[in-house]
Image (cartoon, rainbow, N blue to C red):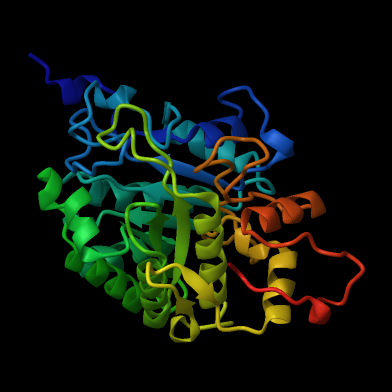
Length: 365
């Protein structure tokens, strides 16, 4: 009798695709809130046996009930399409698609399949390819092979800000295979192979860490030579953490601002100040400098891999909040109304558009 894995559409010939990417390539009808545009096609390897990990917050977790191919991921469906057709649709949109991101899962076949799929994409379309790798099943030699296959950037989804939280939600706490040290070693290897600035760490706010702990981990990623791609926790229905709340908006806004300052080299975690609970009180800049940065709106836009134009391509519209006025990661430039809302969310007074920023007297509270 044929196995379940043999009956389903599997990689490397088939891949799952984010709903936003499926809309972008005209597989699925729909429009984005405020006419947002996705510039990165997010792809996910798929196998009948699913992912071998048990991460408590993930919709693809082995511990989540249901057939793997029917499980949602980041709260939306990820339909499956043939790789050849995906490549052809990307080819038709040379100005719209600025990057492809291929995500591995914890499955023994995903290593070779990632090499083969990356090669096929790069051989047929002139679009840069990022890889979100699975450190538990790869080694440094695989990273070298990924680069040879045409990938130019690597993401490592550490997700948690401390080793204790990582083990609780991804390791022994859930009977999972992942290890904190292995993920950071993979990140170090990726930087060595791909070069400084070409690897990043995914981190997720709202998992029980203090703001000080998150800032220190973002600084570690920066000091090693890469950057942070920041997310807000957003519960996946029916996952083990389906009832875990999102972080308060003011907390997320402070962490977004901290990430921007650290990754842009505008401040350093050693210059930050915190209260007894680890909440950020000062960012190491003068008030007028900080206000100017907030007014730009840039810290609150999605952080991700860039396209060749230097702009973030992997902007994941509404990937960690529902479409609406309380957007957490802006997939487009912020408006004046957005900035005023952000200021209110952070506990700041409304800005005077006519005032010189140097005359603004306030601090983050």
